[in-house]
Length: 82
Image (cartoon, rainbow, N blue to C red; front, side, top):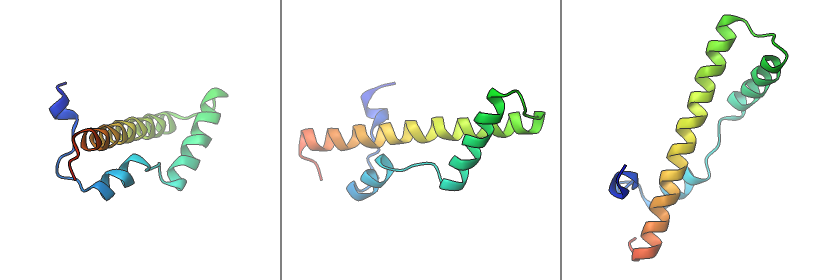
């Protein structure tokens, strides 16, 4: 992936800061914690395994978006861009 494709050029600085500090919604985080705990105990149904996989995918996507926002902020800081 090129450096250009990592930048979020159309997002405002305040939007980038919000993205960089964003977290999974509390309800989703609570459910994720519960599913992870129960998974470690081998207690998940097939539907719950699918739900856990979907939540983990959301976490991965959120982390990638946060990283791109942080990278963009650093690039703006380095170049003096608004």
